[in-house]
Length: 241
Image 1: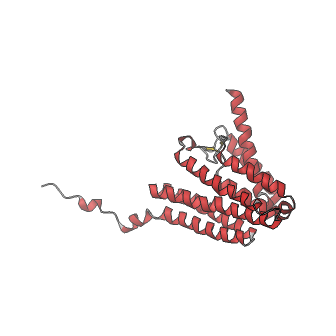
Image 2 (image 1 turned 90 degrees about the horizontal axis):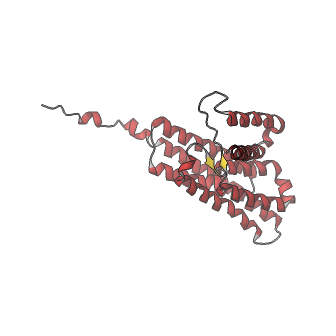
Image 3 (image 1 turned 90 degrees about the vertical axis):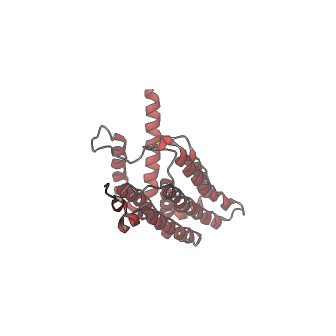
């Protein structure tokens, strides 16, 4: 008689619950993003920036948990993108809107800020269907864009209010960078060898130097360094072809 192995296929409650861990972490990302939106509209830019950074931590760990627990799901992928639209799109858009509202040059000017969440959504939709972005990026990642804006306003809000033209120009430039066909490296190490990770090590060395000089005011500059290095690498590779 053949032995019934159905009992062996019964999954333990703990195993079943582990499959929800990544989505729970993603939900925390979204929750933090919602708080960031509220703080940004209240003019609490430091709090909004902290919310962005907390969301970025959750965004890292939901993917880490999914890999660790082998808990990938179509729902998790969609939820991750929706959370990122809020945390890394709407929050920086709300920050810039709040800043431009203080300038009051005209009534429509602050609404330019919402180009940031629109292009962030376009960038995330593109990422979800673009098979070229498995090991690197095409266009500026939304977390990097959000950290740039949060860090910029955290350190230089007074300067930006006094120079509204720069704020508008940066809004247009970074909205474009989100969807630009610009290769950007990912901070992923194949191993610890210099030969296989030269770009990543150069980036980290630059980050250490920037942090040493600018400390808490370094965040926006770090993203600028990431963009410039990515552009430089792209130009160098094109010359080699």
